[in-house]
Image (cartoon, rainbow, N blue to C red; front, side, top):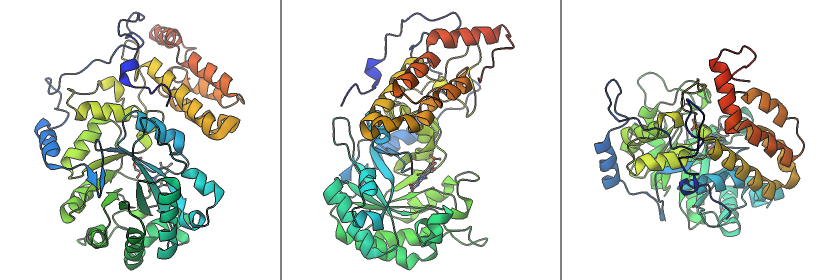
Length: 418
Ligand SMILES: Cc1cc2nc3c(=O)[nH]c(=O)nc-3n(C[C@H](O)[C@H](O)[C@H](O)COP(=O)(O)O)c2cc1C
C-alpha cells in the first residue's frame, strides 16, 4: 500500500507561514480541557472506565479501537474503505449489496465487495439487504468465501422508498418474525460474526410504548447476532431531526451483545462523548468522514489520551475560517489525502474515476476561501490530472493566505466562500 497518510509524514511544523496564519502544516493548537468558560470535552474517568470495562470484540472478531466506518451506498467503495482503514478505522463496511444479486454472482455486486487485504487494512464487513432467509444465507456465503468478508451485516435500516416498498431494509421492522428468521439463517450459514443495522422502529411508537428495537434486540441476540448497530431515528424520519442517542443507551442496557451507535457524529469530541455517555461499545462514523477520513485518526488521538483534538479540526458545520483564525485542517494533509483518494479511485475505476472525483475532490476544499469557484472548475474537467492540478491550486497555502488577507482588508471582490 502506498504512502499511507499517517501523522508521522506531516511536514515539519516549523514550515514558514504567512502573518496571522499557522504554518501550512503546523499542528493545530490545543485548547486546555476545562479551561475557564469552557466545559470539559468529555469525562476522562468515563474514558478510563470504558477502556477497563469494554471488550472491543464482535463475536470472534477483535477490533483495535472503537471507531468504525458506516456503510454508505454510493460512497463506501474500496478506495473509501482503504482510506478510512489507513487513518485508523477499526472496521469498515461495504455499501449495502443486494442478496439476490450477490447470490447470482452479479458482476456489479461482486465488484462492490472487492476487498483490500493489504497493509493497513482492517476487518471488512459486508452489508446485505434482502428479505428471503435462504437467499440472504446464500449471499452471505458468497461474501465470506468468495470476497473474504470478515463480518456480515444485515440491513434492517434503509428507509429509502424504493427499498422499503419492495419489503427490504427498514420494512423488515414491520415483520420482526421475518427479521428474526433471516438473522438465524445467516448466522447458521457463515463462520463469521453476523450483525444487524437497524432503526429503533419503523415509525414512532404510540406515546408511552417502547420502540420495537428493545424487544427485537433481545430476539436477535437469541438468534446469534453478534452486535447491533442502531441509527436512532425512526425509519419514517429518514435523516430528519436529530439522532436520539438515549435509545442507543436503552438498547445497550437491554442486550448482552455490543451496540454500535450511529448518527450525527461530527467530530472527535462528539465521537468520544457519544461513546462514553450512551453505553455503546463502538461509534460509527458516516457523513462526517466525506473528505475527512483523518477523522478516524483524530478520534484515536483523543481515545488514546491526547488532551483534545485542536478546535480547528472540528469546525462548526458550515463555518469558515476568518482572517487570523486557524485553518480547519492543514492544507497539505487535505491535498495529500485528496490525491491519494484520486489515485485509489483511478486504480479502481480507471479513467471513469474523473466523474465521481468531480464531487469527491470538492470535499477536500470545503470551508476554504474560493471553494465554490474551484468546485465550478473541477466539475467541468474531464481529465484527472487537471482535476488534481486545480485541487493543488485550491489548496496552495499562498493562495489561501492571500484570500484571507484580502478578506481581512475588505476586498469586496473576494468572496470568501467562492
Ligand atoms: C449517502 C449515504 C448512504 C448510506 N447508505 C447506507 C447503507 O447502504 N446502509 C446502511 O445501513 N446505512 C446507510 N446509510 C446510513 C449511515 O450508515 C449512517 O447510519 C447514517 O448516515 C447516520 O450516521 P452519520 O450521521 O454519521 O452519517 C447511508 C447514509 C448516507 C448519507
